[in-house]
Amino acid sequence: MKTASIILAAGQSKRMVSDTPKVVHKLNGKALIQYAIAAAKKAASDTPVIVVGNGAELVHAEVGDQAVFAVQSERLGTAHAVLAAESAVAKDAELILVTSADMPLLTGETLTAIVIAQKANSGPLTLLTVHSSNPRGFGRILRSPNGEVSAIVEEAQATPEQLKIDELNVGVYCFKAAWMWNALPQISLSPKGEYYLTDVVEVAVKAGLKVNTLVMEDEEEALGINNRIHLSEAERILRRRINERWMLAGVTMLDPNLVYIEESVTIGKDTTLLPGTFLKGKTVVGERCTLGPNTIVVSSQIGNEVQIGPALIEKAIVEDGVDMTTFCHLRSGAHLGKGVHMGNYGEVKDSYLAAGVKMGHFSYIGNAQIGENVNIGAGTITCNYDGVHKNPTEIGENTFIGSDTMLVAPLKIGKNAKTGAGAVVTHDVADGEVVAGVPARPMKKKEKSSG
Ligand code: UD1
Ligand code: CA
Image 1: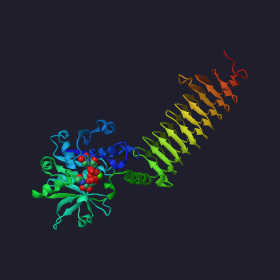
Image 2 (image 1 turned 60 degrees about the vertical axis):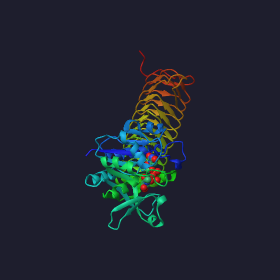
Image 3 (image 1 turned 90 degrees about the vertical axis):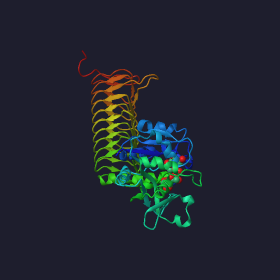
Image 4 (image 1 turned 135 degrees about the horizontal axis):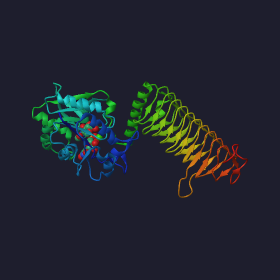
């Protein structure tokens, strides 16, 4: 059965007190609307239709072509919002899943379950309910003495008796399409001046049709985001889900409340994450590593047996056995080969440090290719920028760069060469050559005669 999905997102989200639409606010690095789209795509066959209000450019920009947009130009309630989607929904859809954009913890599995329930149901709709002692403003499910659903009453209209009902309307529905398009226009205006989608239940009941329910087990999934407190609650729940998954997959966390892992990250077993570790974007961490405390890794590849102290690592590659002590900064394009050692306050950008390079303290390496086992003395700087261009530096294997060397690029230093402490190197240095001074000059003849 072809199933279409509609995601309601035309609310004003005043309670966020923000210039940004609520559904573009981020939860664990990803916009709320992305969670709704991903879940809807798991359950329905078609590209979702998102109902937005006027001026939803930021939502468009976030979503791009992952969904079709329908505009509800007046905010006249949830039933009105679904009707606004009519022309955008595929005509041949037999079932319609309706969900809202501000419930990021709802899983694709739950949405799939309600679609399956409705496929097996002869009646016109299935609605998702949850039992909870914390009603959070949700509508209450009214059932007649024989247990059948008779209505949904909104909290604002509920009597004190009805407020005690602990079965709540999650706000997710699966309808027979033809029935729904016919039923929605029959809904009358509520006392609040809105057309409530929940009143569709009464339309069914009046026609003598049975309303089916699917009761959700995990009430956390129903958490709706209306303000930034809810956002932080969702953040905590999501973080716990992710961290528990990685701990069960063999990752040690000293304090999982202080480890922040985005969904797109993967981590090998026997790796330890210390407090304050943030793993973001498409980061891959290998096995038997120790990261942290206070390490931020963004879209980087970290090999096996890597030790990283407090650090910021962005779009970098770190191979097996690298050890970075404290306060290192790898910027975009940094690539550390096997067993590289980086000490305090090193910065590397757009450079390859081959296996065994040692870069002890306070150095900046940019736009450089460094050969195997080169020693980079403290305070060494590649002067790679001449005010207009970024210029490259090349250093051959086993070369020893003395402390405080300024490598004025473009520059080539051969293998087994040496620079003296404080040298300002402005000309290429041959294999085996030793240079020192300002500007640096050869100290002695090369071992091999130059020919
Ligand atoms: C709605 C349900 C309530 C349920 C709750 C669960 C109705 C009348 N009530 O209440 O029974 O327990 O969800 O979260 O449906 N929206 C539009 N256009 C509108 C109005 C709303 O697109 O004109 C969108 C909102 O952006 C939101 C969703 O519909 O994504 C739900 O609207 P909201 O105002 O949050 O409804 P609730 O009061 O939460
Ligand atoms: Ca809501």
